[in-house]
Image 1 (cartoon, each protein chain N blue to C red):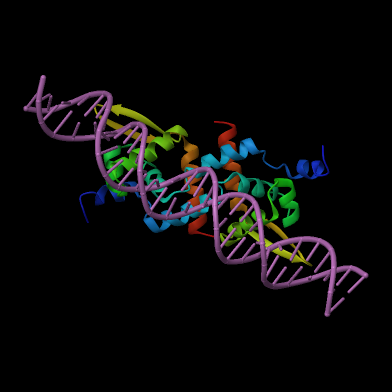
Image 2 (image 1 turned 90 degrees about the vertical axis):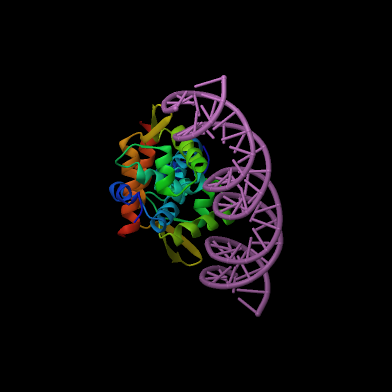
Length: 107
Length: 107
DNA sequence: GGAATATATGAACAAGTATTCAGATATAAT
DNA sequence: ATTATATCTGAATACTTGTTCATATATTCC
């Protein structure tokens, strides 16, 4: 309890732990290369080489970025021979992406 | 036209300019301090000093962060004497915030 | 006017991040 | 087994970013 307790309750400010988690989630969407990867995977699963080619990223950079996205469970993988196919892990990812895109396109 | 043109059309990959813009938008949400500021402003306008106090950020850091948010038009300002009150600029901001929060809390 | 208060600003610094490079691992083809 | 292909990894580097510190601007009060 301190002199801001009532205000804090009123505005329901995000605590630091959740703020950290939420920041990590949004950070996944905070880089143009990752966004292009996400947009590529929006409707289609795709292997690393193809993602690399259509985004113009090197294979190494692509792989690094995909690892980050996978650690956040935003993408999942399916292995087929020596290829690894990535796809978006859940609908939330698409919704966040679409909502952001909608914001920059209209209003 | 190149050998990926059809694939690119099919997956509708985000072009670099829009990817850059979208990344800037999501970057606003990619830092714990800014998220706490946004959460504080969710239902209430608030002056810089109060934001500084309830977030625990210095006044300077708060001001710097608010400037970034204002440049992205995510917050707007209202001046009253020597105080400046900040509030979220549009409903999109809340929706994005809530959607992200929902994602880290459930699922 | 001069002091006090609220906010903004620019430079400097530390910490974080995206990419590249070189090389490692794993699977397939010969 | 050897070679080729797909992906991954760790270290190095250039770049970005959040905060602090010192100072500036603007407004109110006396």
